Each structure stands twice: as C-alpha cells, then as structure tokens.
Length: 77
Image (cartoon, rainbow, N blue to C red; front, side):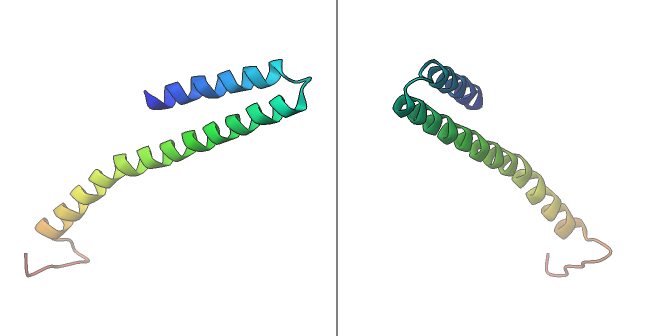
C-alpha cells in the first residue's frame, strides 16, 4: 500500500516537472524529487523482499538443524 502511494507521488512529481518544463529551476526541483521518490520505492522493494524471505530462511534453518541433513549433523540439538 505504501508503494502505491509512492508511485502516485512519483507520477505527480513527473507531471509537475513536465508542466514546468519552460522554467529550468522548477523542472530541476521536480526532477530531483522524482529521483528521490524512485530511490525510496527501490529501497522499499528490497526491504520487502528481505522481510518475505527472512522468515522462510529461518524456518528452513530450524528444520535443517532439528531434523538433520545428510550434509550437516548437529548432535547437540
């Protein structure tokens, strides 16, 4: 949901920059805002991927350590 809001905000800054294309100062301002929003969206995507896969990796590690694996034996669990 947050990413959707950021996408809309990025499109808004793109539109404002396009409308101010005759004024270089404002065009640069909106372009900078658009780039920062795009960077935020990319960081949120990476964070979301790690949050999704982190629990799966923890579960797989628990299963491997608890049930044992052919390549790794833990006698202390």
